[in-house]
Length: 410
Image (cartoon, rainbow, N blue to C red; front, top):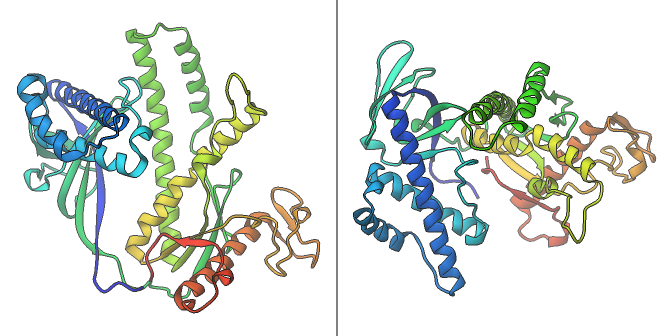
C-alpha cells in the first residue's frame, strides 16, 4: 500500500555539555529522582498485577502530584521530566510486559532524563564552537557546537556517559520520506557475520576494527586493577570511569560505522534484504543452572562476544533510520539454509560450504565467496517476497516465501 501523504523525518543532534559544578550536581540529583520514580512506579505496577488489577500512566501521574507535596525532595526535578519518566515506563510495560521491565540500578544505570516540551527550550549560538540552551531548573547551559542544529527543537534529553554529560535534541529539519527511491528497481542482500560485519550481494565487504590493541591492553590492566580495589571506594569509581571512557569510544566507533554503512547502502538500493535474526536469543548465555549446567560455555561466550562486537542489531536499526530519508524498503527474510543454498542452481547441501569463506556447489560446481552467495540468496528471497506482497492477493499462501517488511514501500 502506498502512502498518500508526506511524513516528517525527525533527526537527533547530540552535543557535549559544559556544566558548572552546581549544574552537574543538579543533573545528578534529577537523574537519581527519575531513577527512584521509575523503580517505585514499576513496583506499584507489579503489585497491582499480582492482585489481578491494572495500573497505567493516568493514575500514577495524579499520585505523583500528591507525592510531591508529601516529599519535597521530588520538587528538585521538573514536573515534565517526572511525567515523561512515567510515560516511558508506561510504554515500556505495554511493549515488553510489566514483569519483563528492568529496574534502574544505581550502579549500572547511567543518569538520563528528558524535557519533552520543545517550545520551552531555547537554543542560542554563542560563537563558532560554543552554544547554550535554556532548560527548566538548570537555566542556561553551555555546550560544544559541533554541528548545526538544523531545525525546530521538539525535545531534549540529558544523559551522563563515562564522566561526561551530553544533550540530545530531537529536531524537525523539514525533511520528509520520499514516495519513491531515487534508484527504483535496485536491490541488495546483506549477510551479517562474525568475521566480516556485513557483506552485500554485490561483493562489497563492510567491516572495521572498533578497538585498538593499545585500548585492549589498557582495558585489561584496568580490569585487573578493579579486581584489587574495594567496592564503594573512590579509587574504584575512578577506575570504572576510565573503563567506561574506553568503551564509550568503542561505542561511538560502532555507531559511526553503522550510520556510514547504512547511508551508503540505502542511497544506492531501493530494496534492502536482511536475515530475520533473533539476536537476543542467539546471544543468550549457555551457563545453565546449578541443577543443569550448560555445555561448551566458554565457546558460546566467545561466539556471543563476536556477534555483539559486530553490532548486528545496531546496523539493522541504522538501516531502518536511513531508509526514512531515501524511501528504501527493508525486508527481513527467513535465514534458514541461506548459507547452504547455491545461488545459481538452488541446490541445498551443507557440504557445499567448504569453509568460512569458500562456497562450492556440489551439484553444479559454482564457486563464490560463501558470504556473498548467502547475500545473493537473501536478495532473491526478498525480491520474491516483494513480488508476492505487491501482486500476490489471489495467490496461494504456500507460494509466498517467509519474510516480513519493516520499512516503507517505495
